Amino acid sequence: MKEIRLEDLQLGTTIGVGTVGTICDATDPRDGSRYAVKILHPAVSRDPLIRARFEREMAILQRLSHRNIIEYYGGGEHDGQLFYVMELVDGGSVKELFHGGQCLTWQEVVSLTIQICSALQYAHNHGVIHRDIKPANIFLTSDGTVKLGDFGIARDLHNSDLTGAGMTVGTHAYMAPEQITGETTITGKVDLYALGCCLYEMLTGEKAFSGDNFMQLFEAHLHGTPPRVRDRIPGCPSAFDEIIAQLLEKDPEKRPFNARHVQGVMLQIAAEHNVEESILAGAKADLGQRADVGAETAIGIGQNRLRDRIRRSGQGMERPEASLSMMLAIVAFVTLIIGVLLYFQAD
Image (cartoon, rainbow, N blue to C red):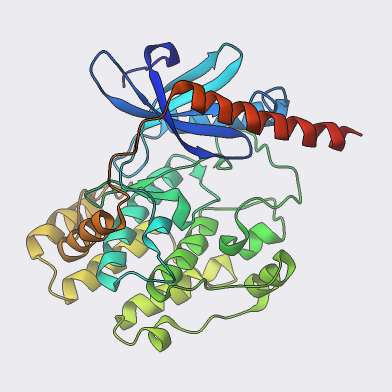
């Protein structure tokens, strides 16, 4: 893997601004290669816990090398700012495919699920629990290849956890019951639960669990049961409906054993609905031979529809270039706001 230094890149337009960092695109003028760069906000870079989490995210990405996980190209500290360089994904996220409650076809979701499961099984086999699986963190290339990203709150089983006992981490709409209750021992089953929430939303256009506030949402996760997918989407294969219900079980022990099992169900669904056997053959062989489920496959029908949908959404279009000064101005503004908040919290 080649290491990319920040000083070798020309920073371009800002892609996103979060609570702790800014992501912008960048170009290597030597060969024209494009990347994404995540830079930690200066105002929070002095916080030991935030720095530790950022450094842990870099360490996790450096350890994970898989076609369905965003690739890491190096990182470190430059002029007092922590940063890392990663693959620039040109197709947006699954969340951006939703327009006004529009949902995806089951064939598209089968294609996505096979690839997501491949990434999850690989991460779990390497001791990494994502803990924040959601449509916004499932990225797509313009040809419909899944790239799982944002390992900012992932748990690394090979190192001590940075989450305090009893703390809840994750996005409320996709958090497993054991995350909500602050269980100290969690497994990859939390990612499977979140996957179930994602699949439900992709197929129906609505979240599996909802509430007017986080307390109502947590109550729904802990005690509620959403309508079955087939009640909403009659054309959905019954096996698909059943695996989603299993993924959403409150008890982790009642969920599928691992992501490999879910992927196997998806392959079976695809096979039973006349997906090209030549495409499935490689995935089936891979599924049986490799524990990381690196199924190098793109389900034909679903993949083609995903490509078309991405093109229609405009997410695969080139992003307009922006000046470095504009990016720095945005970072400075966010830094100022965070600094003010931290100042008042300190009082």
